[in-house]
Length: 212
Image (cartoon, rainbow, N blue to C red; front, side, top):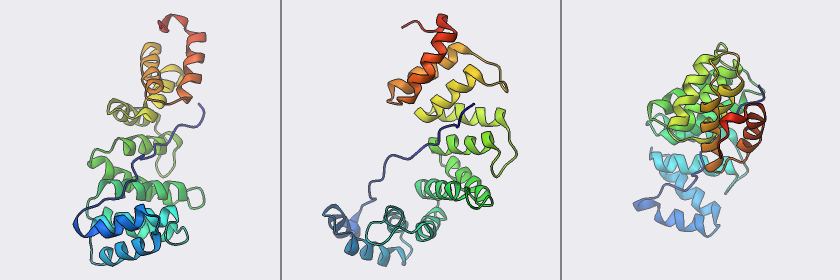
């Protein structure tokens, strides 16, 4: 099978409440340096929302040069306060770092599991990718499939593509062309254009499953 799809958390809106209002105004006006300064002052006091916002800005290079190290630092502080998006984003950064440091995949697994404990669908999908590719864990495609299924059932379109492909063509599970079609169609309806290619292939190979 070709490379599976990693999930991205699409919501990157700043967490905002109370004392964050001025910083958010700065941010929305594109005045990133004062926004970053305001978030950093609060982040150093242990405020998880400020830590998350600061990490996000470092990750995107807003207010300073992009810094994965700084982003990881502040995401981890919020993640240790059980903030699900910080746990996920930290795991994602470690996942990406694994290309140069294979040990980073184990840290990605750790934080994906923390985010899974907080029911984040994208974390199920991305942990499945680690098991699918044997990165930071022993390769285990059946386990990957179960994680993909959970994410897909929670409405994650990336996981629906991954589940559909496995149902259609994986040699590691019992194939089910109808379920492959159903998942790929859901992903396409959710705007995942890559699902179209897989649906075309599925319909050419097993035309009976494609009723519409």
